[in-house]
Image 1: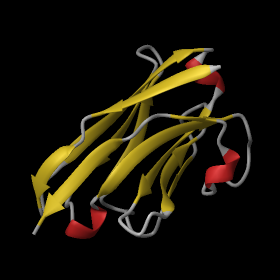
Image 2 (image 1 turned 180 degrees about the horizontal axis):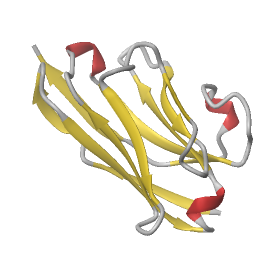
Image 3 (image 1 turned 90 degrees about the vertical axis):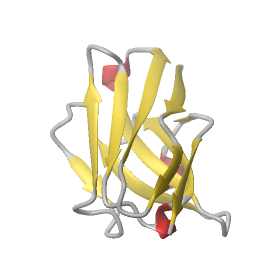
Image 4 (image 1 turned 90 degrees about the horizontal axis):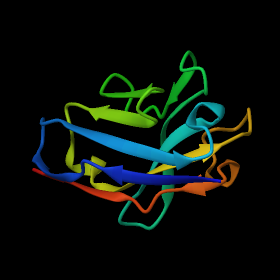
Length: 124
């Protein structure tokens, strides 16, 4: 198993930036594909970004392309989400997740392990 813990959320004005972290412990972090999701006020969990275990393949939701960047530090067992040009509609609880599956990284059901989330609030 792997345990995931998000941090880095907070309150920021529109146009600002935040960097979320997802610290992993347990089984080898490098074996997993990793993803970021967010739970918006309508209570839907939506895909944000994903990265393959090797770090060479990434995928982003259209709504965040060009603004968010996913990365991982294998030595630190940590994944990041750099969020720039934040908008009020980015307000949500952000979750990191891990999976062994090689397909459908945009679907929450693909992931086996989840963190508890970190709140991001963007004020207008």
